[in-house]
Amino acid sequence: NAGVTQTPKFQVLKTGQSMTLQCAQDMNHEYMSWYRQDPGMGLRLIHYSVGAGITDQGEVPNGYNVSRSTTEDFPLRLLSAAPSQTSVYFCASKGAGAIYEQYFGPGTRLTVT
Amino acid sequence: AQSVTQPDIHITVSEGASLELRCNYSYGATPYLFWYVQSPGQGLQLLLKYFSGDTLVQGIKGFEAEFKRSQSSFNLRKPSVHWSDAAEYFCAVGAREAAGNKLTFGGGTRVLVKP
Image (cartoon, rainbow over all chains, first blue to last red; front, side, top):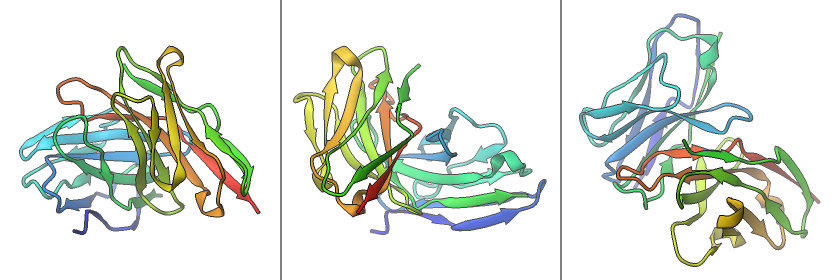
């Protein structure tokens, strides 16, 4: 199993550009989520999904869109990038139920100039 | 709402010395508690987790953590640190309600290991 994969690893955008961060998992996990990591703030939840066709907002959803058309994929879209979105983004997945741990992808480092 | 505080932003420890990382949480009931480690440029790896039962939890890489309900703490310890333990460590709390899927993370503690 590849686990949780993310592409790209690095990305530089100009303000106002749009892009999609890709996330895929091959563990048949129902739950997937996106976090952003900023220095001193730990990881903050952006959006999450409890299954295909179901998404919900996390702690910091503004400026980001998600969709979940399949169990495997959970892309994160930035519609109009802003410098405040410069961050490292992590995708995670887990089995249904609180008892299961989250598995994290390797991250995407995004810089918005 | 749940929250997690890691009071130490940086800790420097000599190789072979003991290590303790502090974690305090706020949650209305007994939470699920996790410690993750992030090596430079890597994703997060689970070190250990507490759900119920024995309050002293053993994890991977020789780490352990103790849940203290009275102090709302879940401190991470290692008796003898190796140079490879240099990393950032995150404490997280998960809710026990029906979905129970969301994690709230502390700000992290960066550990530097001196030779």
